[in-house]
Amino acid sequence: MIVSVAIQCVIGVSVIAGFTAAATGSIPLAALVSTALLGVAGLFAATHQSARE
Image (cartoon, rainbow, N blue to C red; front, side, top):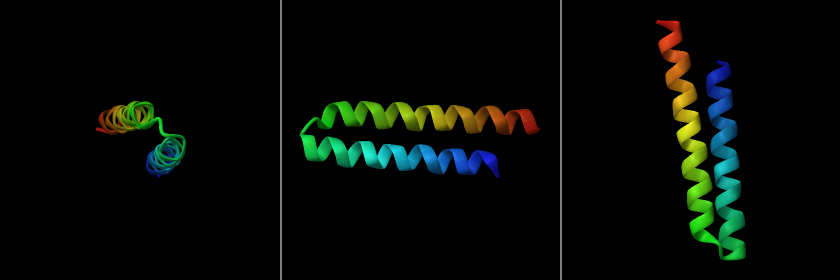
């Protein structure tokens, strides 16, 4: 439950970062930030799933 909430928060932040970058014109930076955030979310989910097993 907590993991899915954390992932939703990270995705929300990534979306906001993407919209902000589109508005300011710094698309490469936004792509980097959202990729990093999604990577962290994936790592977090994988860690918690393996801990549960």
